[in-house]
Length: 293
Image (cartoon, rainbow, N blue to C red; front, side, top):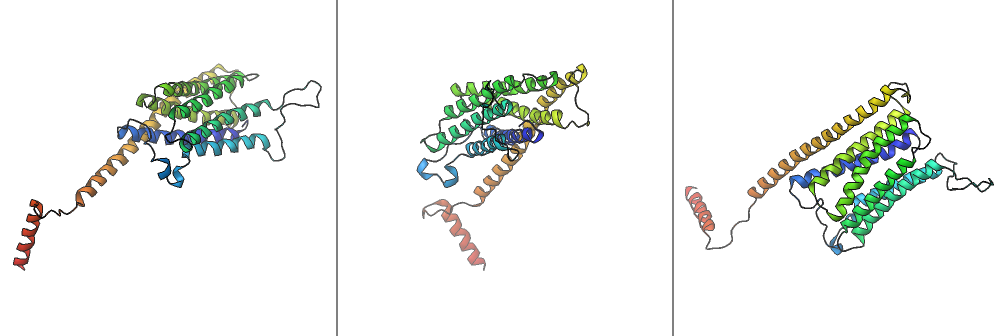
């Protein structure tokens, strides 16, 4: 993960996942749902694709790929060894890689919790899912804090700003363990998720491939000041993306609702009760048409 591509993979994972979550939140608000996702049918009546939740499956697949890459990429490298037994001092090895593996591992645990909650229980245990996800974000924040050792001022500032939305998401998830299904928390979590996703992309570009072609100067106060400015812009960008998502979902929701209502009005069951007034009117219309012919 200590490369440009290594940062891009989790950044895009967070971005797509948070966009998907923003769509769920927008539709839940438009439909005035009390829960974020409608409950699935009973376990015995579910289809095959409903047996494993998509969110849990994606978490498990992506994090497993990340762990394998941390261990064995580039090809020929093996970082499974954590202690150098050949050195009499027995030093630890591959500190940064084990940081990343630990972060991936707890998000893998969150995916497993999602799958267990949906597949092994009659009713999904939302509290278990939120607790496992909150734990993953707390571990992410903790690893980011320890990741700051022996870094320059620029890298410390970038990672501290990244920890802000991570901790907010972790706190929201902790609250949802005891107070679930609160629309205000849905919106806050979606917003902070979009912010941490876009800032992780910014972090990747800033540290490895600056747009100007010149590296950022850690000793320059102006460069450090612009980090906070750009982070504030990302806060506004998150609001804009969330508002655009809600607007697009609103257009789709109203269009789909109007189409459904028109279909229901067009196709109605024919009355079969011989004493019904509507049936008598239809018979009278048919008689008049036959007489006209």
